[in-house]
Image (cartoon, rainbow, N blue to C red; front, top):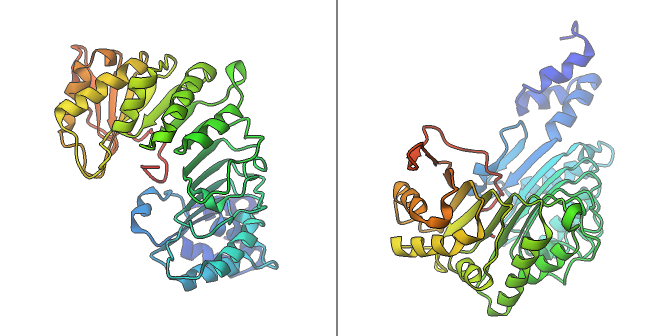
Amino acid sequence: MSSLPVELYTEIARYLDRSDLAALSASTQTLHALATPLLYRHIAFSNYASLEHFFSPFRHIAFREPSVGQLFSLLQTLGDCAADVARFVQHLELDWAGDNDKPTPIMSMLNSDLRRMSGLTYLFVNRLERFDCLFEDVTLPALRECHITHWGTLDRGFLARHPHLKRLSLAAWYSHPGPLRPPMPQGLECLRMSNARYALDLLKGLPHGKDAKLARIDLSVTGRRREQGVWSEILRLVQNSFPTLSQVNIVGGWYAMRIFQHARPTFGYATRACVSCCNPLESVSLSEVEVRDMFISVAPAYPSVRTLDLLSGIGGFGLSYRDIARLVQETDGFGHVELIIFEDGTAYSRNGNGDFELLPTRMDDYLQFPWKNL
């Protein structure tokens, strides 16, 4: 390798696994400088096995069912000021459910490490609801994509400090100190939220009309009665103020269906939409009559939709994919649908006769979030 030009070292190192990168990092000064940024650029730390499905295929440090000791060790390494490896982290996934562990030391270390991650572009944090204000006064200047499942980890100025965010998802809202302070990220292209009041405040703070940037929105409707009027206002705002939206996903099963029946929105610009075929008890599947009624209620809102993504509850669909495709075909408002994609990638395409037929390959172009349900 010493006979090769130095500029080729990085290209070769990209194909090495983690153990080889670690060996390079521990060898000569030149190879240490080359391997260390690659070794720490992507970190996925999870003690929850189901998250493994969402891990990126790129080379990264991945911990499967780790101990709290490993977490401390990782945070200590990232916090080493002399080594300064935190600045190399570009992609960070944390899914920690250490309910029996004292959160304070971990939170303090993680908060300190995050402040050093000047190159972080992707952040996913799940199930750290006990880490109140984990991101207090933290600024990540390169951050472009952020997925947080518990708002309690954020302080109210988080979005104002990250004006360059492009993709944002904020799930469980309980324990949050209050609405996030403006200004909101003006270049936001993809948004996913579940709390109606906070979603409305955020949407009002984004550019509207010809200045809008938002291309996709995912909203999860809940059964809270006090939010019903707010959801109707949100749908009117989405309908009238964001002509740039090509994908509008209003999920929540029966709850979403009732909002559609009440507000009667029309997203004429949306060419792709998602329908969640589940009832409030997600372990119970919908019958054919219930799925048909849901399609009939939702279809008028999407007169231009070409691609329909379908999600199920925990209990599954209850019907075969072919039967569901038949119901889509029989729904008048879905006459423009050309492609149906189920959550596992199974897809049905409309043929020349107007019937849906199973595609031989799975579709994986749907932008997945690290969790299905908000």
